[in-house]
Amino acid sequence: MDFTNDIELCLKVLEDGGLILYPTDTVWGIGCDATNASAVKKIYELKDRTETKTMIVLVAEEKDILRYVTNPDMRVFEYLQQVQKPTTIIYDGAVGLAENLVSPDGSVALRIVQDNFCRHLVKRFRKPIVSTSANISGEPAPAFFREIVHFIKQGVDYMVQYRQEDDIPRETSTIIRWQNNLPVVVRP
Image 1 (cartoon, rainbow, N blue to C red):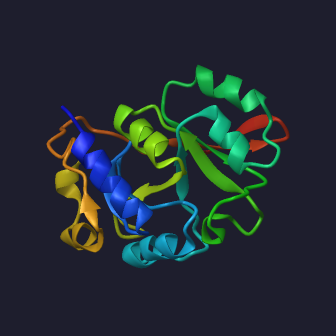
Image 2: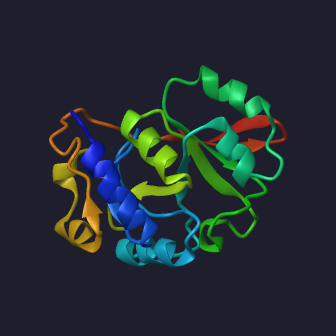
């Protein structure tokens, strides 16, 4: 399926500080410009999520990690090449991102996306994009578009059409904290 129109509409919304509802390499997500604190705040409000619970940020390539993390251990890239499941890494030393995305300890959760749609979107946007599950905080992450509650759908500025009919169950990413040059599993 061609998703060119979805990409163009998403780019306009992201550039205007709005929210998108979009399929990721894991579950459907709510997204915005990860460098725009007011856009990030809109997601916290929509999800009824406390700002102390940070969100995942999607990037397109390894070089993006180098741009938004001060001193990443390069072994993380070797580790990521060995994993099968989409994996989010919590890195210390976040820079250049909205302050309300960065944990009090200065860390941020970043994932290099493999999904064709997401990769294309992030590359075209030329900035990282927030990715948080399309649910009210504390509720289960919807496995399919049809499971996303009406309130969330109404709260975004654009809903991607691509993959709305998808019936392949997807799971949230594995989350790893990179500590002392080793991966520590936070969420399997």
